[in-house]
Length: 199
Image (tube, rainbow, N blue to C red; front, top):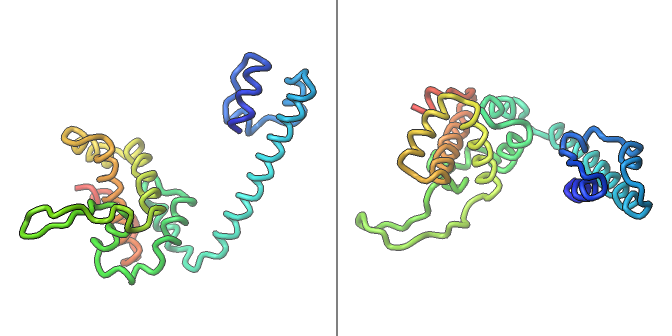
């Protein structure tokens, strides 16, 4: 998609948005390129992109059918910012929630807490920041970015945190709250409650 846009822009002098690329047909794209070489290269890019989209959709369908507990996916999707893809990522990367003794262990596994070594209340160095699951970290940060935009209670909590901390730290704090909420949802079989998660 990113290689089609500049080719279209150079040839026609117009911008082609990603939404427009999703709707454009091969015939329309062919008509935009008078030069045969550029037209052929762009059509190949479009066909590759469409083929990849078909394979991705097929893979997503297969993963969804293979989920052992689809009811847990529905619960996770009650969290603002968690749709089918992030929900499946969280569910499959978490595995059995019973393997985490506490919510703190789960948050640590999701890389949502700082890795610091303390002794007698004094910092003795940093732990390994790469311990834990990077995909869960990514998923909760993505969900946090969406949730702060579209969920008023989470937005208010984020703004309070943002007033005292850097934006990245505040987003990570929202992700931490979401990870904790998901732990309890998966363990207790409940749905998301913003009042309980963001007091």
